[in-house]
Picture: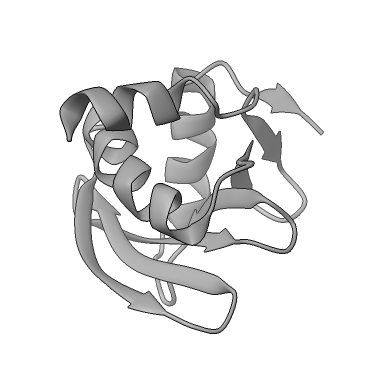
Length: 109
């Protein structure tokens, strides 16, 4: 599983940060199944604690936390994107997403 996740990490596009939407976004040309395999490895690299996955018709959702700040992680098949955004009610969520964007060298869009 680890080598599969690593090869999937290599398929991610350059991360982007939208300050307007407070989102850290990766172009993610993967299937839902592949995205589900990739996410634990990616969140491990970011030192984020990953909650359980929920699945919609064309979207996957996870709760996430970074140093006790609630975040949300989503993957959408139609737009081939994976993104982190502040969780509901997270007081410093926007700052944490911006910090994570700096950590991964995200391009500002």
